[in-house]
Amino acid sequence: MEVTDENLATLANYLHQTLNPDPNVRRPAEKFLESVEVNQNYAILLLHLIDKDTVDSNIRVAAAIAFKNYIKRNWPVDEDGVDRVHSSDRATIKTLIVSLMLKAPSSIQRQFSDAVSIIGKCDFPEKWPGLIPEMVEKFATGDFHIINGILRTAHSLFKRYRIEFKSQKLWEEIKHVLENFAKPLTDLFLATIDLTTKHADNAIALRTIYQSLMLICKIFYSLNYQDLPEFFEDNMPIWMPNLLNLLQVKVPCLEGNEEGDEIPGVMEELRTEVCECVSLYALKYEEEFAPHAPAFVTAVWGVLLATGPAPKFDALVSNALTFLAKVAEKNSYKSLFEDPATLSSICEKVVIPNMEFRESDMELFEDNPEEYVRRDIEGSDVDTRRRAACDLVRTLAVHYEDKMMNIFGQYVQLMLAKYAEQGGAAWRGKDAAMYLVTSLASRGATQASGVTRASPLVDLVRFAATTPRPS
Image 1: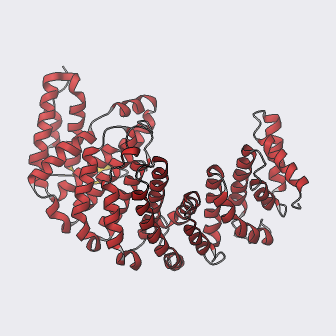
Image 2: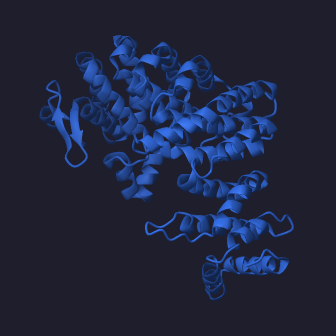
Image 3: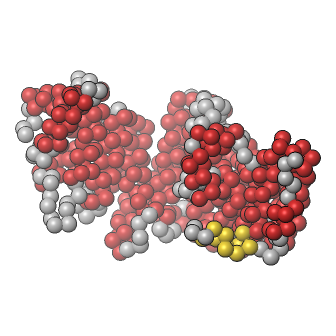
């Protein structure tokens, strides 16, 4: 397949047919494209078509999706050595894809970003050593459409470090990335934070700038996940104070309800990522993070108190509660929680409000009860406020058992007394009280058996027998 105007027009016509709702038109076009994708220059034709501004945007997006799916199906070489991509096509794709991605519209840029990630998983860094330098070079453009495209691609490329098993090959790859990417990322982080001040009155610019900071935090998390890199350890005095500021900063033009109650805004997403980053440090790099822990505990506490019950805050609240739990389980941070007044405040202002059953929980339970059970009881990958609050209580109960039983027990009695007095009208309080008691009592659990060991200070049988029931 030569790269000619005639072949480009033919390809565009078949892609247009794949968008047709009539299966008699759509399916033959899809089968034709699948049959010709093994031909040399097929992927190059797609790239040239995507790059043509004169082509209809829907066809360009369809071509970008077809290209990504082609890469997903064909780029990895089979175990038996069968290579379905011609060697010249491989070289041309890697030469063109980054520059094409960065000048493409966002809808196309995301498809290219996924394709780069798939190629990178197979070829980076040995067969694609120029990828990181090419990406870093684009930071100097100052164009945040380009910069965010690079950051999205870097996140897509590096996020697998969170799940990969330790190996010599993985260490070598991360070492290569850190040597070429860590300092430019840090410089970009500082420059982007500086821009938040310069554009303080421009809501459109600030939205893009804070999106960049959110992506930078995602990359920072991935690069720090396997081990604490020497570069980031040396630069904690740069990263930690600025991450702390991002938790506390108020951006009036981005605050409010512009995203609705369901979808988190850019500031919620950013704070969620910051909480995840500092949770990682609190859990894995206790000694290095210790000087910064008290300030972050205070800041996260402020975030929790200022965050409402709307579903758009759920990820932020879950990550904030997880951070407090990670800090609380470390002996070096014990002084931050041992004051009875602190534990009482945690119970009243953070734990109970996030254990209570909300209207949005009721809607999920009514509309999709299976999903509600998966999230709230079985422990799916999607964290919930209630589960995060329960985890915090369990962690605190291990280290401050006597104090927790006395202080939290008082709140349980108050909620049950209110239920005994008001009956069904106060059922949410009883529900929260039961969750609180079971969290206090749990000392060991497995996925298959549930709780396997309970605290001797909690008489669950007596609690169940004496808990008021509706009249």
